[in-house]
Length: 313
Image (tube, rainbow, N blue to C red; front, side, top):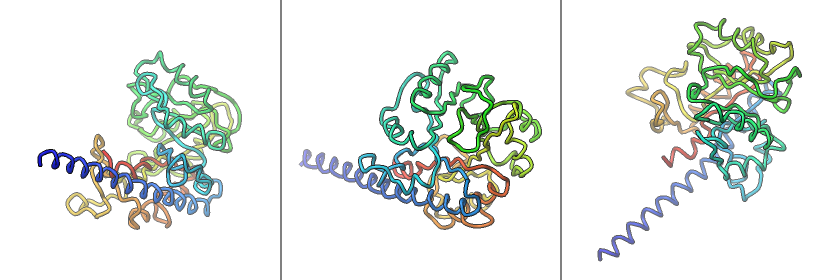
């Protein structure tokens, strides 16, 4: 009887795991649809609006399985992928599975890699290895883990005009502005650089950047054009954003799913819920419309892998 109970328990655990995997796979397909809808909405207003999901490279494939082949209809609505810690995760530690996914799409889509290196001595190698694979590289060190400083050196610095994501040869990932007293100093610091693409938060201390301010960022220090992309969290709600309602602390909507471990100001969302969709895209009050109104060249979609983390911790 005891042995039977053990096997029964193992069966239940395995069954539960399979059930979670199936639910995650289904929600992965729904995340594909979410991104397609967001892109289609944005591009009815600006046909050149750039869409870059961060992580979730499985989304590039049918049914989110690499063996099922590329999902061409999904790929037609995005311009690239941002990927964190895929070659260096502190030290050299390539993620072969994700790299294999990226190798299947790098010829048609731009890949922006933000690796993490413990030691500055690894920066050059991280950049070299990413470049050899056809990726754009932005290595982070411990003092810049949260994307809050501008590196002093730029890989593949150039004076070309960057009119599309495919033109970019390097990028700046600067979504924290806590090191700057005001918008003016933040803008001036970026304008003193020659990065081809700058990825920033759309807000400075809760205030949305204006079209004039974003236009001021679209010229490199050497006079050439560059792109300005806005960070947007589509998989987790952030309690410091304009859309957050104070009474959600006690009476939160059902589409707020669960706390995001390690990020006390974020909660994973049921991204397929109509109320969350309305916050992110599809109407004049949506987050995406605010980015368009401010003149951003595109959106960088964070936490698209919510489809997985809602079911697996």
